[in-house]
Image (cartoon, rainbow, N blue to C red; front, side, top):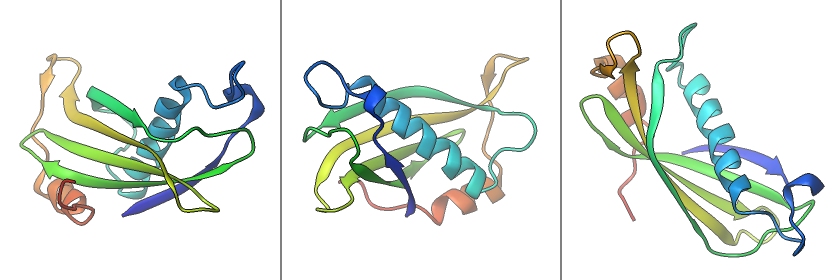
Amino acid sequence: MHEIEVNVRFCETDLLGHVNNNNFFIYMEDARIRFFKDLDLVGEDWNFIVASTKCDFIKQVYFNQTLRICSHVVKVGRSSFHLEQEMFEKETGELVARGLSVIVQFDFEKQKSVALTPDMKKSLSSYQMAAN
């Protein structure tokens, strides 16, 4: 499992005092980019797109809380993989949100998906866990 931490900034909260739901997608993106870099999936050219993403909001999160975001691969396909990201409040360990994204390797010139290489599949499989 791949893990990062994010600290909730004041500007990420709304008039109700909790994190606006749009920011969870930013947290997921930050964790996803670091996941790609740590797995060495991207070089000079970024050739992955998000084909689908969703997030279930489980508990409210507030300014200055620290979230631990755990990312793992649920499924590896021909040209895509499914990445699940669970967000926990660091101090209590409580699950606050769960997201799922479908990531596709993409050829922007040809405008079509491209098969993952065997090395990519092997690297992704090392972070694979069963779906919940």
